[in-house]
Image (tube, rainbow, N blue to C red):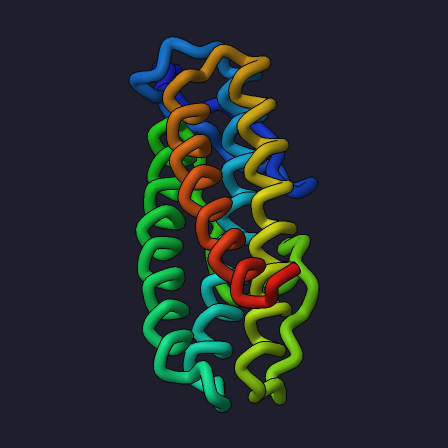
Length: 175
């Protein structure tokens, strides 16, 4: 039987196949990276939906400033989510991003969808962005340990921008 470059690995406890990759990293390292990237993808897709809920439902004196700011956050996160998914696939994995998968695996707290006050949204998003950053830092550490500078660079870009977003929110709260 010819080797098609397909190798088994586990993601979230499920067996799946890892495909041939242009990456020189060993299969075991790639499997670990794919798993951590899928965890960040789940958190990122969840955070994106939470940011959009805040964007759609915000009311209050800061509406004019926060409504477009939240959209900026969502757009940048959508771009990063795509890059994270594509990195997992480039490493030979599969990107898991359905709503059901995200709901089952995201580490972020549920967003109270009935929130409407501007500064309540600011506080809630700051908390969730900080939780997202914690996961991104953990994944970056995995990439550093496994010598994957490309994944490390991707995650460093995410961390840099979302630390700035968290700062904007915390500065708005003056805490």
